[in-house]
Length: 380
Image 1 (cartoon, rainbow, N blue to C red):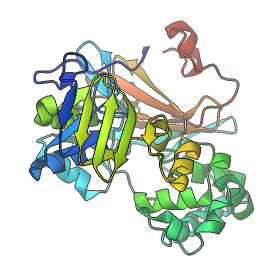
Image 2: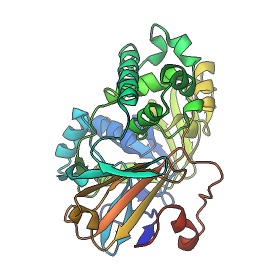
Image 3: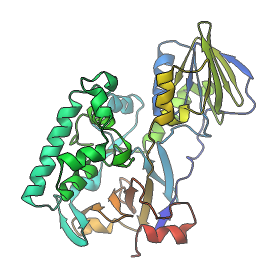
Image 4: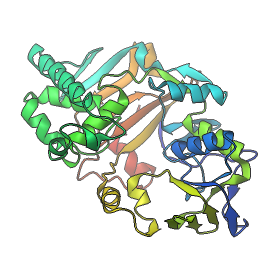
């Protein structure tokens, strides 16, 4: 068994132009800053509509948080963006780009629970009837709150100001007195939130749940062959030389006369620009004139979470022979949530461990395989 760290995707034919020997000035109708999936989808729609669009990306690859890692010779798997949820437009994009999907194995067996020092195996989270009632009531309450919030304009919700003044942790402590039920609620939201509950407001939580379609919305046991990063690479290839990577944007000048985007290697003159970046990253760009005060404050104070994804690689998915799904959850500091991330053919066994938020006092800086592995798993 070994720990697989994240690496860049391999080069492919017709890859986007890299920062360097490119024209110093480019004219376009629209500039898109950021070549994650959001930026590339926006650029693709504009390009299909006949708009002259150009994409600029700081990293030396496209895809953003959709990333693959080589877990064994010739085998790449997702370390970011693995599942297709119930959003139809995502499934439509997969079909349009000719990508293939396969059923995720996690739903094929029992789950291992390690809670309070006790190990149990079964389909449902072990808890008392009182805890289960408290958990179900909390989920219903959160869904009811989310129904009042538009994910596009959460600040216009009827009680937006009040919800924004309450942290998610304080709401949990007041409305979910049962400790096991609180843990179960957080487990349901682990994919959506990688930020400690005391650092996000209840309004943010409600808006995210609304965008997700509900707390208990099934992510769907479906993965994309080649991962979501392959979708991004395909879209970038469609744009060809209009996609520039390795070219971080430093300044954006905007006004009635248009927009000028200054990157390290390219100056883009356009009518409009789309900044498809996280608010925290967009904050590092200089805007002339400055952004409106409320937008600037949003960029400055947006909470970006932190988490660690570990791929534990075995010769075979041995847990399947024991009737286990590969899914596990624990309340240990370095535990988090684990599931089966083996390739479609099951040629090797891969367990994906997702720990968030990061516990204090645990060394997470890359220090080589020997120092990192004991934090995540024993040996087999």
